[in-house]
Image 1 (cartoon, one colour):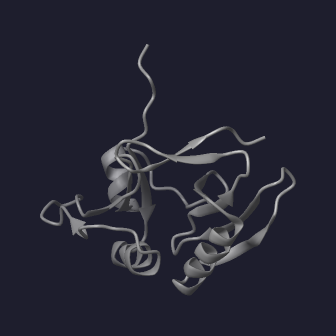
Image 2 (cartoon, one colour; image 1 turned 90 degrees about the vertical axis):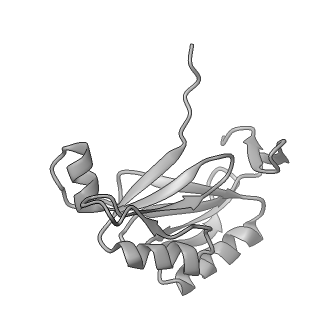
Length: 154
């Protein structure tokens, strides 16, 4: 049986340049910048995450065109992107960095009902991120010197 693997998480955005500035300049995510501009619906930016995973930002209209689905209204309550970190202090630091970069903070950092610590922010296009420290997860380094999590959220 094949093991599922997610390699790219693509976010549809309204303003590609604004999103690149938010993630690159505001949050410090590494990117070569916008590529594919020579194609009618191809302009996209990729950000390197961990273990070969990439975050992509692509114009909503172009994403809908590519997937052949109707362009709908954005909804921030359909999913979250989880950013697991090593400590509650790191949650606070990243949440403040996101706020300074222009993110809205609907849920400031706080202790969770399950014993962790988290907060939520919205990027400029309303994508909901959870920055979270889970005391049940231990970060270990793999051969590529990237972080992996062991354990599960209670």
